[in-house]
Image 1: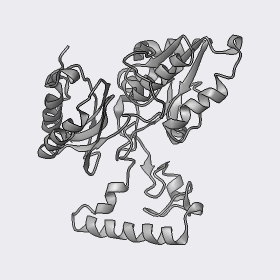
Image 2: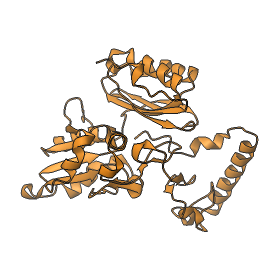
Image 3: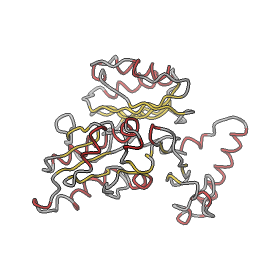
Image 4: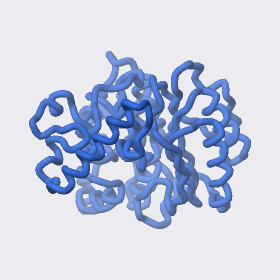
Length: 326
């Protein structure tokens, strides 16, 4: 089924589009310059990853820019059914545009994992609550520890990973080592937009787990479709752009970002004596060297001066986790 621009929200604000698709792209290197041109000419900012296994990324732009980008992608039959998850932001969610060539569009570090060949069972947001409330279901949050810390589903297990590469090791240690009669009957997995679960469910099936499910469209789709009064989501959902987090209805959340360690921080944490804007926060202040504190302080000073001149300082390019696209 071919998608159309009618699916893109009509808004005078910035449209954010999170997209991915596992599809064979032997010509992924040739796609890059054309994709860069479309984004540059239409004020699209963010990050798009291209690999032999597909495309992944999150971008933001005025609606016309997103329309131009998606029409370019949809014109390629391999992306004809690409259906981004859209949300609205009051201002640009990114500071620059990057199209990167990668070995994987989401890095697990395991060869031969192909979601087009083998993948878990998709569960619509409307059916997710029933699945994760089933006592026979083990619910696993496949995201990283700092994402889990600000919000997750009730009863979800935290693998305490700092990168997605660590997930297979966690499975090996905590699940594969269990006797067959002690293994969970059902495994339900979720992530921000769905891409990590595509790979993680494929991996779990490869490891011999049989009844493996994942949330279709990820947390973002769940927060978009499920009313807050019916939701089993607790907290906020970390996103890899300058919004930092979103809540039910995909409204901008209440977290800020430490510009030193890139950790989400609360208003309460910003009242700490260890929080210095642009320099450090309670999560990282004690681990910073005096030289780092000095350099970060100088960077913040330059950012403030540029802001006073209504300019964007190059240092702002590294203020968000823009190098990660789920």
